[in-house]
Image 1 (cartoon, helix red, strand yellow):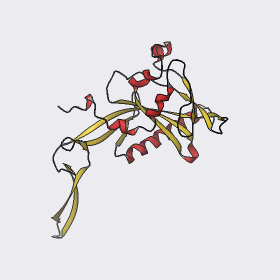
Image 2 (image 1 turned 180 degrees about the horizontal axis):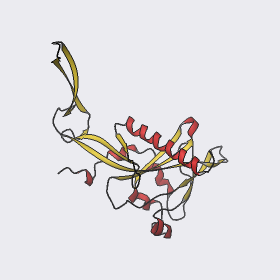
Image 3 (image 1 turned 30 degrees about the vertical axis):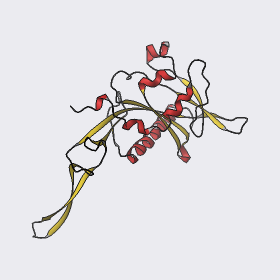
Image 4 (image 1 turned 90 degrees about the vertical axis):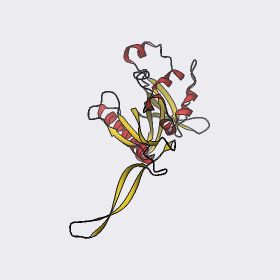
Amino acid sequence: MSGSDSDKHVIGLYGEMRLAIELHKRGWQVFRAYIDEKFDFIILKSYCESCQAFRKALTRTGIYINKKGEQKKANAVTQLCEECEQDSLKMLVRFIQVKTSEGIDKQTTKSGEETKKFSFHPKIRYHLADSRVFYVWIQVWDADKDEVNYYIFKTSEVGNFDDLTLDTYQVTDNQKTELPINKDGEVLKQGRKYDYSVFKDFLNNFDCLEELMPGDSWQ
């Protein structure tokens, strides 16, 4: 794709759709705001306090008699945990800010490895707002082949790989960084002050969304 605003909008929608599918596959319910001012997605997943694990709701099969006197079978989703059958299911919520980048300037290293340059705009706007806020940066290597990687982290972790005292962060809350990345999602940039190898911990790190945190208290 070219770099026009319409193309950027399309690749952004593509990234969000791919992310929504990945989250759904992992059991999250995905909601998108009608008016996008802060977060792109709000996601929910049921957690059983008794089992201390993510669980689905119990589906119960019952028999009833309809108006014609016929016996019918029906399934009903209950409020109970499907495992322990206790009324202990709670909904965990996560707030997701999504950014998508499509690579340009494809090159081949001396070792034969292909790389592309990706424009990365980390934001720090919400890093103190709520412990349940996550940033998902999507690296699209080839949209036609659905070759995509996801970097998932809390906005507070931007300080692990960037200087938050930069004027661009203070004025606009984000800093444009160009990252060379290979097809497997490995960031190859060598920083003088910061270590970009931390991105390997963010790569496709969907498990971090399931870690319990202070905002999950239901008391």
